[in-house]
Image (cartoon, rainbow, N blue to C red):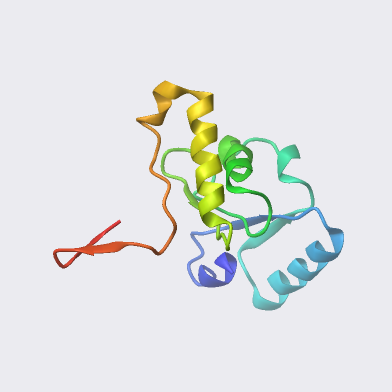
Length: 129
């Protein structure tokens, strides 16, 4: 989806990571048919060499705490993480917060606030994000 949304702006290049060869074949066909600025890595994300990404997205891959761990080697402070979550969102946020606390009590105060995407609140006519 990200490759399709950014297809007209050739400054962007999307690298997809997929371990399943059948899914890679489908994705390659879509890339060719739609002339998308994208490539596919037929591998598991855990085996990829470190690199820097502007955006990391994963759907139905792992719980949030694992996604944060797996994406660490590809992030810089400016990296955006898009991890759509379903009905277990609150439990995953609770588990992730607990993991952060266990890893380093001192880092909790400076850690980014975890919040569900799209649940912003209006405050005095402005959007609080």
